Image 1 (cartoon, helix red, strand yellow):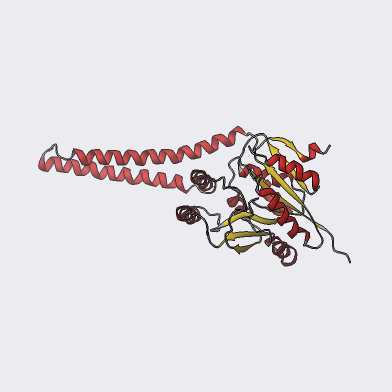
Image 2 (cartoon, rainbow, N blue to C red):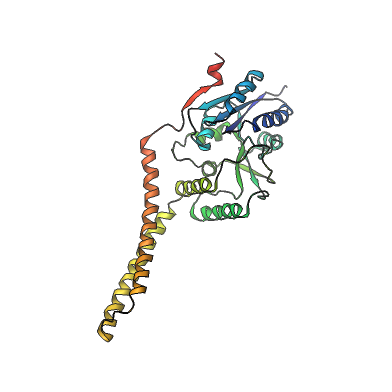
Length: 317
């Protein structure tokens, strides 16, 4: 009996990646074409690029019908690009990959076999090292994973990449999560399913430069913590209770000292320091509350995650 042909969709977010795209296409198609009984599509999402990314995609799409693309009206971010790709993908199995080849295409064969032959719903990848990254960036990344796993009930594996191959059932489950503030690493863990992890060593970009600045990653980390944990709100509440109790103790101490020793003027420096410290804690707790309130505000607007300006489907008509 002849085996049925499975379709694999590769979702590839792109932002100013004109140099990397040809390398990615050559290497990834070579791997996909080596997998028996598999058809595929490379679904590129142009996230409002300012270079020739869209021109390169147009040209390659004309040469290869398996290359399709969507182009945003502006830069909406990688999370929006991944969402657009997952919504547009038509494959039985869907993978998310970075175009810079830091996600090794060679793993696709093993990922596919794990799902088809061993019954996994998702095969995800994680880096076993951060070779090539600065020590500061690697340190903060490691601390982030430790922190979020302590604060959140949803496990997020240290070194986890967005690079994973999923069944249609997993993707449909992820698409049911309609929140505006998206943190895909947390969503992948939250939906569950039977997942196998594959380790690989970090590889340098094939071309171009990373679009993630330190502050961009920091903001993304904050979104992840807020999106998958209410622990910061509890920390703010506990801090308020502690300082309330300390203030009561301080008032009692001052009254007793006044009764026993009078009310000397000395101690103004320490008083100012305490006031500044407590004020800082109050502002910190208010900031935590403000972050949650801001995210709620964005959710209630119900704005679309992205706007597509044009696509290869429209151009082919």
